Length: 334
Image 1 (cartoon, rainbow, N blue to C red):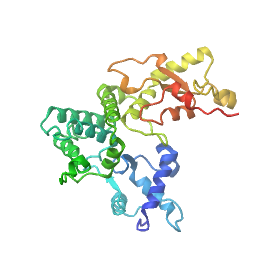
Image 2 (cartoon, helix red, strand yellow):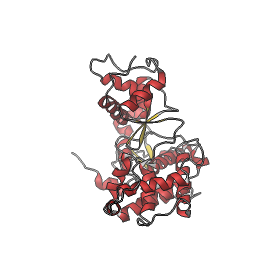
Image 3 (cartoon, rainbow, N blue to C red):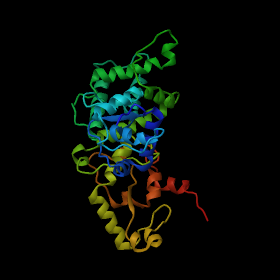
Image 4 (tube, rainbow, N blue to C red):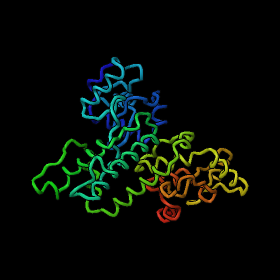
């Protein structure tokens, strides 16, 4: 089946559907498996390229429906070629992954440490950021080299911001312009917001630095919720929440009290669904992951019982909302 009729809006519609359904549901609905090699990159997020292209085909005018994994006449190479023709970035196994929003925040923070004369490629500061970025990718499951983000690459990415820095370009200088669109988005978000940038960058550094790779690899990952800001802080936070040991302990404690209601909105699944909802609740870690020190053990008091809706709202921000913030945001009806 040819992908020649596929348009950019068709692909974007499929990505929206992926975001709404969540990765696991989307793949199961259309009979695809998770991508292991080629990823479609959009606004710092990664999408399984073949599944997105196949589902996008159902949005083509006159299409009989989505394509299955076996419908592609040229295999994965055809998918990658067409997506790139449409202007999309596709991460290939022989290329380093695109820079994410978290990485750009850290690079911008380092750039602003001295915009007139940023740290050089051989500096301790650039070497330290390189190490943090490599660990960040390993936490996300990247199996490549420890020099994925080497000092030279980190320095060049930091220098890309000079092409956006009005103070620099107003002097008639140009800077390195081979960046990506996300750099301008991150710059605009933090332009004139240096304290906010410093706080967000430090939160990311703390989360990555204190994370234990060996421990986390034993805990299953989770797909992002629709509308959440994502990033390594949310990913690590939700990973810790899926630790079977702490989930079992919290559920056991709830069973002893007989109370499985949501600690924010008081929703009780059993009261609403009868036996089907008995003992059902989600577990939320109330302590932001970037505040957890290395080796710190989770206490039951660090965990909260939340219904699915409140849990999703807790993760709508880069740093999860506290229970008090959730209660304050809750609009009571009736």
